[in-house]
Length: 173
Image (tube, rainbow, N blue to C red; front, side):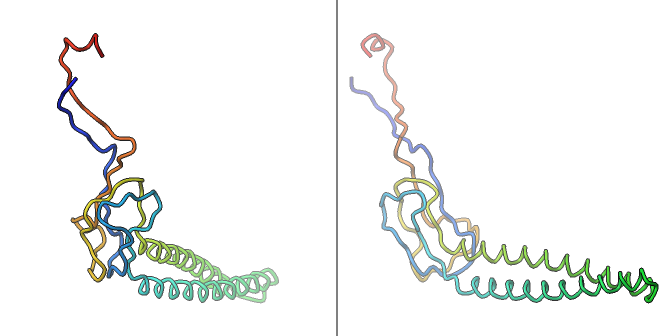
């Protein structure tokens, strides 16, 4: 039987950057078949790596201050029990320890965010499929979640085929 039909990709993904930066590498060619996890683009990670080092250093500093504040709180607790220190000094030590603990947690989140930014500077394929035209080249600047895609990947294995057949051919099929 001859009929007219259409072929449709099972899924299609528009690849966009999650970070701002300069593209330093394009690791595929137009129309290439890529697998899930293949690196597609590299964005200059140096700024994000520096932010990660800074966040890690801030976390180390605040953890050291938190350790000291907890030791001060333990000393003030002992002195308070023996009635050698005022309640105000104890309250100050407790508040200082709580504040530094919160600061350390905030810095842990900053380290995790910086680590994600470094990870996002390497754009990988989320699916197996065939790439379209490369819309961004090495040297171009990209912005996080820009409106235009860097490339579109169409999943072609498996693939949908839609066609229509006249009812009179159903018994034959």
